[in-house]
Image 1 (spheres, rainbow, N blue to C red):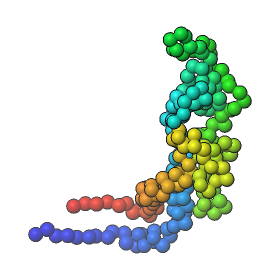
Image 2: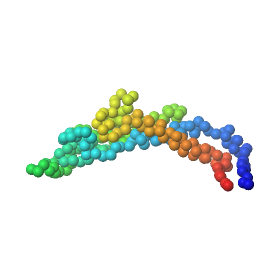
Image 3: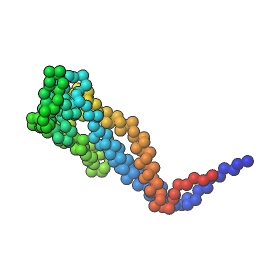
Image 4: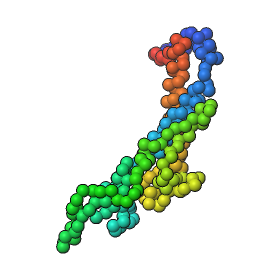
Length: 195
């Protein structure tokens, strides 16, 4: 017959570690890790596309250079591909892609940042890119996401928040487990299992 046994070595060290545990510091780390996830999610770009879904014509812009069309080069701004069509209607490029108008990219993907409050229990994910609301504005934003940006696949900040909520369990498990393991190791306590 098998015998089950539980042994608790270093009970005094474990008790001392529990009493001295920096719960607030661990919670701050959890808040920070959730903000890192949110920042990464906000910085995601949808797939490049030649034209906005559901549109057509010369003004159906996307992110892929297409002769005789304006397009938006990520990180650069509005561009135009000069071209001409032949008698068969085949469009070809006739010169170098050039800047189109004064629209410039403020590089939304790389301009998200985390900002902690004084006690670090609140971490906001922010950007100062002037057009961010039109691209990713949520229902509570002063500037809402446009239908074009929705059609192109940009997530709103509401969708980013839902993604954080959907993943907070994983973030919490990973963060708390790591923090507790590091804390107990300081007291010479390592979690081990044996048969």
